[in-house]
Length: 201
Image 1 (cartoon, rainbow, N blue to C red):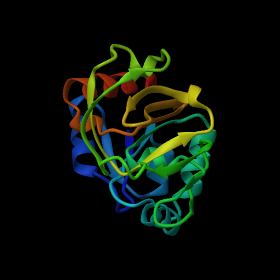
Image 2: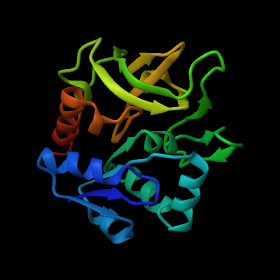
Image 3: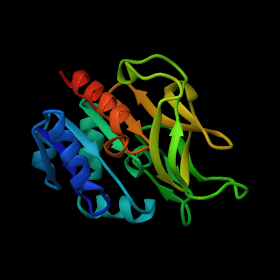
Image 4: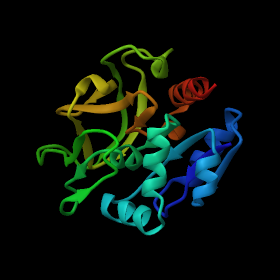
C-alpha cells in the first residue's frame, strides 16, 4: 500500500487517481500506523509552506516522516511536498521544514511573472533511474511562486529554466521530489510515476 499523506494541503484526489492509474494500491491517510505500514509514501501539497508544516506538526506526522526516511522507505514529495523536505522556507516569514534535505525555499526574483505557472521544458542535470525515458525538452506542468535552492545541486536530476535554474526533479537515495505536478503532466508525468513505481519494486 502507498500512503498519500493527508495534512489538509494536498491535491489529494488527482494524486490518488494517478497512483491508481499506474496500478498502485493507494490510500489517503493521516494515520501514523498507515504511514509506517506502507511500502512507500507520497507527500503532496498545494498551498503555503507555513500552514503545511504547522499541520504536519500538529498532527504528529513530522517525526513519522523523518523516521521512515531514515529507514530508507521511498518518499515522493510533489510541489509543496518537495519544498517541505528542505531546512527552511522564506514564504511569509522564515519557517523550518522537515530538514530531510539540505537547502532553502526562496521566492522567484521580482522581475519574473509569479507564480511560475504552466508548461515548462525539462533539462537533464544528471542520469538517474527516476528519470529513465525522459528527454531534454519534455514538458511538465508547474504552479509555484517559490523554488528550492539545494545546498548540493548534484541532487537535482532535472531542472527547468525560469530566469534561474529551477530544480524540477530531485533525488537523494530514497527521497524523491517533483516541483511540477506529475498527475497533471500527461505522458511525461505518467513515465515518471511509473519510474517511481519501479524503484519501489
